Image (cartoon, rainbow, N blue to C red; front, top):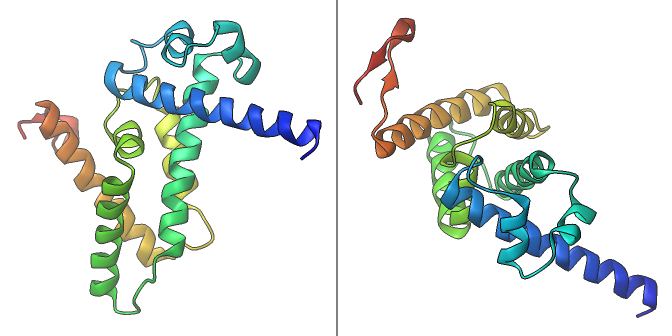
Length: 171
């Protein structure tokens, strides 16, 4: 391995450490409760080292959203989806559960962490939904599951689920 390859490997490993630390902090503290300095302290790097990889907290957060939803999309792409619509819905649900079990911090970050303005999750969900592998039936199934998961997350947090017409309804 040459010097250039070694530098690229170290850069990639550092970036991964930053992302893992940030994911954990965003999950436990929420977007507003995390600073770039905290991320640097968590991995025992200087804040300057973090800024070599990410311009600001927003870019770091959006990269996490992108990576986590890309990982979920990869899991869905590798899942064998049955032709029967009912079996397909079951498989989509099983795939979500499997993803959450194998990648709990990714799952919590994507679906349970208080987000900055909605664009982060919206961007991630749209990236997942509009992949080439999604057909209209799968899209409908995924949207139903996302709605159910959203209601469960709100209920877990003790928040209300919006009722029809935008009024708050107790969960």
